[in-house]
Length: 292
Image 1 (spheres, helix red, strand yellow):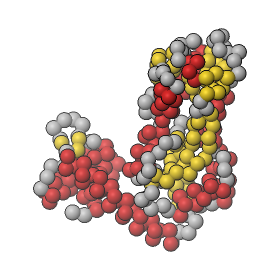
Image 2 (image 1 turned 120 degrees about the vertical axis):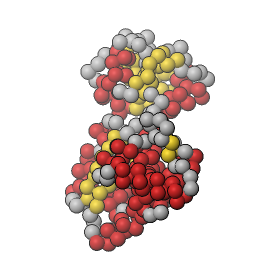
Image 3 (image 1 turned 135 degrees about the vertical axis):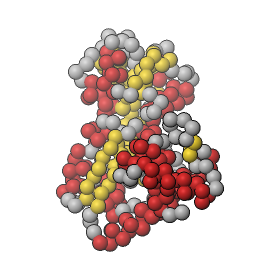
Image 4 (image 1 turned 30 degrees about the vertical axis):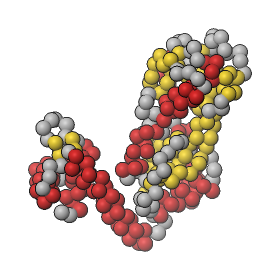
């Protein structure tokens, strides 16, 4: 068993497909198959269930996959440490953002960081909140901007806290109100983000704590579509206050929630056990000293 065996196995497990893994690794499919078969022979177990079109891990495969991720991350840490000694103040930060977060919060921060560290590249990718946590967990990205709560195996740095508000159509009976209690909305139809998004759970839990289960009329992964559905009186939605400006050109109105105040808390997260490069640490320190 060597690092190459584990690297090939992990990529096939992630992609659940030999062809896709070979394209990413730039290695022929037969070579990858041979490597993984050799690993299975050495361990005397079957790691991959190849009986269906979509490859799945066996019970033994799950164990090996979890351990292989740790080993590969440790090896990556060795290379990163040595590279850091050679290339001071150089490097790359892989940063995960939730949709719209970058536009709303980060232009000035990123511009300032780039000015101070011109040789550090920031590679940004978008994921929903739950995907983002998984990507940080698996080591695919260094840092992530997501929403509380986060698991205990992450370090989290508070960035921003803002209230959720009720988005209603311009002819809604509540439109003249400056604020409402969440319990006042128990008979409304809600338009929520899908379960993939952390905000979905925040809204569901807040409603349950206020004594009712929200009636969900529609779910969407698209903010603009949620705004359109509110406009056409299909329901109401709960959104972060910073998102209200996104719907200024539509016939919608935002109302504060007086009880309880529901916080949407953005945090910067990274995995506690993962080695952080100079570039990633520099970005964290910059964020901490330049609050949003």
